[in-house]
Amino acid sequence: MTSSRNLLAMIRSHAAGDSAHFLSIAEHIAEEAARSGKTRVASDISAAVQRARVRHEPAIRPTPIAAARGELAGLMRVTYPEVRLADLVVSGDLQRRLRRLVREHEEAEALRAMDLLPRRKFLFSGPPGTGKSMTAAAIAGELGLPLLTVMLDGVITKFMGETAAKLRLVFDAMRATKGVYLFDEVDALAARRASENDIGEARRMLNSFLMFLEEDDSGSVVIAATNLRSLLDPAIFRRFDAAFVYAKPSSDEARRVLTNHLQGFDASGLDWDLVDRRTIGLSQADIVSAAADAARDAVLDNSSVLTTEIVCQALADRAGIHVE
Ligand SMILES: Nc1ncnc2c1ncn2[C@@H]1O[C@H](COP(=O)(O)OP(=O)(O)OP(=O)(O)O)[C@@H](O)[C@H]1O
Ligand SMILES: [Mg+2]
Image (cartoon, rainbow, N blue to C red; front, top):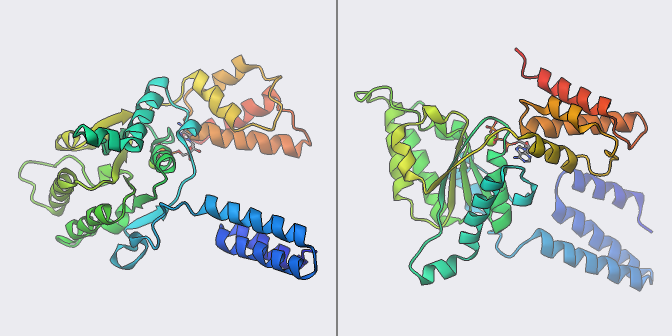
């Protein structure tokens, strides 16, 4: 029934992440089926398309989002993450604190009734690949909000005063469009002042950021992330409502990352003591990549069974990336 042309168009739109086009082709197929008397199939397809549309287009999605237009283009990237806090492997304490802050936003009404506001400004610090950016995405995913990643190379310019003007646009957007705003690698923006007498552009930029952050009373969540916390100007810390410190995984956490990413494979024969030893020093991101490498190796060996050798080799290869 489905012509190969339709099938090809669906595969292409899926690969391009264009779910609207994908669903409209499916609708077209339903119409063709209805015309040729296959009413049952036609109504099943239509119903599936409707369900998929509801899932893909949550009512809270602002359209068209201000950030995609005009002078904000080039300053922020907008995504609608589907990742959740449950996907994040961090210490129990960090997971508990992150869930708490999400609950504050989910139950903001209850807080407001008591003249309280949910906390909104957060600092994430820790080594690369431990989940800082992923957490920003997961908070957006949990709250059904867009994630607006501030592109600092677009914001920071060498022209006097222009960086402050661009930062102002970003902070204005926080009021106009409720979302999770992520300043990744914020140390580029808020590094410690070189000296008290420094009156250069870097200082002007830092001062504007501190001021905008302090003045911001939008409803948006503002996250600053860095793996160089010690470089930050000390004046920045009191502008945040809370700070979260990320770390490389414990052996237990490393196991969880591996098993989460090796679902569908038989890992029952793994010698975990040997595997644990290979995860030492690796970040969660490294382990995710190693799991994918191991999965590829297993598939190429025509097997869904993972051997200790395959997994340890993938982890060792990954560790090699960090050797100078
Ligand atoms: N704690 C974690 N739990 C599960 N997966 C993780 C975790 N941390 C990282 N990952 C995996 O690694 C990828 C990259 O991680 P992420 O971008 O969050 O790191 P980061 O801490 O922001 O690093 P950087 O400091 O380099 O920006 C994630 O998309 C995810 O697949
Ligand atoms: Mg990051």
